[in-house]
Length: 566
Image (tube, rainbow, N blue to C red; front, side):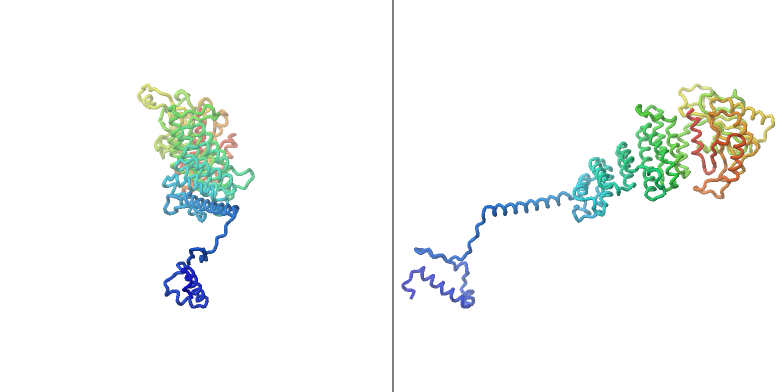
C-alpha cells in the first residue's frame, strides 16, 4: 500500500495511524516506550504541498489603545513599587532598638527613638523623626498623643541646637494640638529655648501657652494648679537667665512679673513645696549680675524705662515676699550674703554730735532690754557676733552704728586714721542698735539721758528711714513699749517707716519644726494692736520673728531696703 507513496506521504500516513491509536486510548501505553516527545513529533512537511502539522495556537493581536493602556498600567505599578521602596528608606534610623518608623510604629517607638537621638546628639534621626511625625502622622495619631511627641521632639532638638526642627515641631503643635497642650510640656520647651539663649522666643511662648487664668476662674483646680506652677517656674528660669546674661533691666522686669503673680498663687492656697521655686539659683544669678554691674560690665538697657534698684537682689526679694515661703536657710543665707557683703562697727554714739556723718540711710532697732535686738541684727545680717549678745539685760549702752557695704578698707580709716581710696556702694546704709530700756540695770540719770537722746534722734536725724520697734512676742507690750510707741507717734516724721517686730515667736511653740517656725498668741497680738491704737501708730505693720528659726527675715529686709535706697 505504501510502496507507491513518497517519503512525505508515508510520514503523514504513519502519523495518522498513531493519532488513531491515541484516540482509542492505546497510544498512552506505547508512547512512553518510544522515547519520543510531542514536540519531536511535530513535523512539517516539506516539498510541493507545504502542509503544516504545527498545532500551536495563534496569539490574539491587541489594538493600539489596548497596548497603550497595558503600558500605562505597568508603568504605574513600577512607580508605586519605587515609592514604597523610597518610603521605607526615608524613615530609617540609626538606632538598633527602633531601626525604622512605619505606619505600624506606635508612640512608644517614637518616644524611644527621640530619647536615643537626644542622648546621642543624632541630627539625622531627629530630622527623620520630625518628617515622620509631621508628614506621615495625622492629628489623631496615637489618640492625640502626637502633640506630646512634638513637644518632646522640640526639647530634644533644642538640646543640641537644632533650631529648625524645634521650630517646626513647636509651630505644628501650637496649630494642631492647642486644646491638648500640657503646661508641663510648654515649660520644658521654654527651658530648652533658654538653654539655647532664645529668651525672646521663650517669653513669647510663655505669654501664649502659659497665660494666667481668667479673672473669676476658680483657682483651686488641678488644671489651674499645674498652669500656675509651670508659669511660675518658667518665669523663674527666664529671670535667672537674664541675670546670668548680665541683662539687669530685663531681669528686673521679669521679677516684677513674678511679684504680680505671687498674690494669685497665695489666693490659690498653693504650698511652697508644691511650686518649688528656684530662688537660690535666681539669687546667685542676681548677685553675679550685681557684681558685674558694680564693675561696669552689666549696664542697664537705655531703651527700657525700668528703674533698677540700688541692688538687684532687692528685685528678687520683692518677688520672693509675694510667694509662699518655706523659710529655707540656704536661700536666706544667700540673700543676706548678697545684700550684706561687708559690715563693720563704726562708732558708738551717746549724743547727736557723736553720730557719723549723715551721708546714707539709717535703720534703727529699738526696744526694751532683753527683747532680742542684738540677736535679731545678727540673724538679719547672717553674722554670728556682729552685735554682742548677753544674758544680762542692758549690755548695749550706746547708739551702736554698723556700716553695711561701706567702701573696702573703711575699717583701717576707723582704727588707724588711714585715708582709703574708693567710695561706698550704692546700697550702703547704717544699722543702728539702740540701748534697751526697762530691765537695764543703769542709773536713772543715764536712763533719762538715753530717753532724751532718742527723742532728739527720732525727731531730727534727717537720714533716718525706718524704725524697728521690737516687742517680746511671748508677753506683749509693757509700759516701756507703750512709752516708745507714744514717743514715736508724737515725734517721728511721716516719711520714716515705723515697724513693730514681735520677737521670740519660737518660744510659743513646743519643739518648732521647719514648717512651724513660730507663732504669737492671739491675746498678745490683740494687746499689741490696742497699744498701737492708743499711741496713734495703729497703721504700722507688724512682723513676727524668731532669731532661732530665722522667721521673718525676709520681711525685715523689705524695710531695710528703704534705708539702702535712701
